[in-house]
Length: 61
Image (cartoon, rainbow, N blue to C red; front, side, top):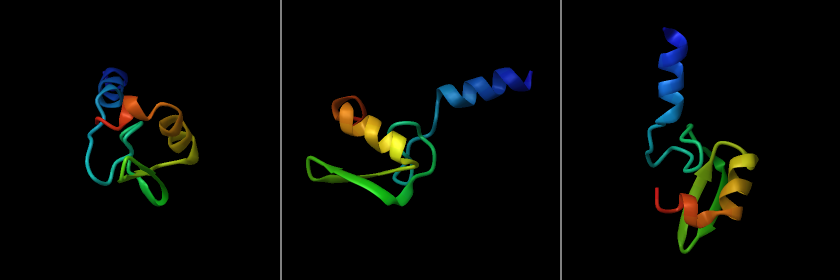
């Protein structure tokens, strides 16, 4: 039961100003990248690199 609930939670992360646009986890304000005049914060360097490689995929979120 809890495994299915956990999978559902992972599949639909909440998005907000303080959330990583790649994975939806809480962002670290020290890890940022500016794209088209907007600054994005990330939870990790891995998410920052993923965003940098595919900004069009994540900047619309």
